[in-house]
Image 1 (cartoon, helix red, strand yellow):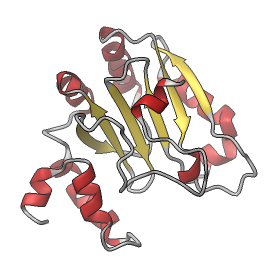
Image 2 (cartoon, rainbow, N blue to C red):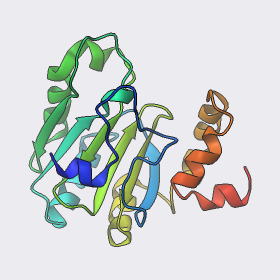
Image 3 (cartoon, rainbow, N blue to C red):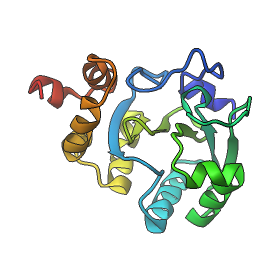
Image 4 (spheres, one colour):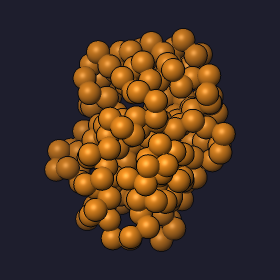
Length: 194
């Protein structure tokens, strides 16, 4: 799970949390894409496509690590949840592991943020609860593979624009929107000043 620290900016201190609109990825050369959040995938077939792609790029497993400082829960836990999944896993395996973590938290819709990565430093997925979006960061060579799996056009902003703009209106900081768009290189939104 040490690769998570190479791909993401991780803090286990609840007082030094790093989550959007901050940049959570370490590699400034990554290409970023946005897709609907709330879960890693939409369904079992999309999960299977993701596993096939990860196998194709040489991964044997992936890890999921809670962004502990960003999680809002009344639990008295002092360490983040971490789990690894083989590429041969299916969506029910993934969901069952999350339920083992804490069924009450998983089922109650508690705000959870997650880092997901494999053993290669070339990609990662940040599952964000606020805004409720998944941010895929990867080297440019992998971008089209992720676009195909998640049905993303360009950087995905146009597909998620209406939802994101509603989320941005609820932000406590007036700069949240611009920081998010700048940190994740959402150029077409900035150019139109939408």
